[in-house]
Image 1 (cartoon, one colour):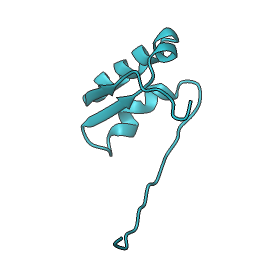
Image 2 (image 1 turned 45 degrees about the horizontal axis):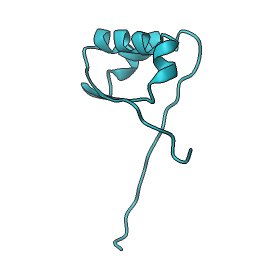
Image 3 (image 1 turned 180 degrees about the vertical axis):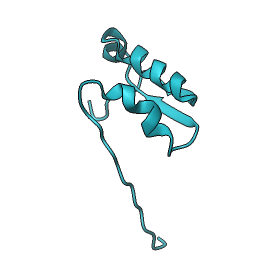
Image 4 (image 1 turned 90 degrees about the vertical axis):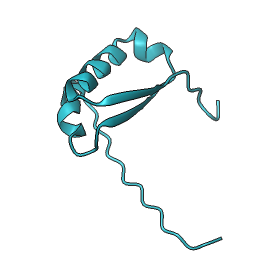
Length: 73
């Protein structure tokens, strides 16, 4: 195996009303977003629609991967 360095900085933003910050937050990340979700609760809760609305406002292209199941279950 070759030597390598893996660096994966992660920024998590939590809280009421934080979805509205998406357009501003995404400015430094480019124009493509991969939205990964399981399916049921994100849509039942209305969060999916809120996120899609903000992503559209940001003018990004959204690629969706729906129906992802937890592993391990």
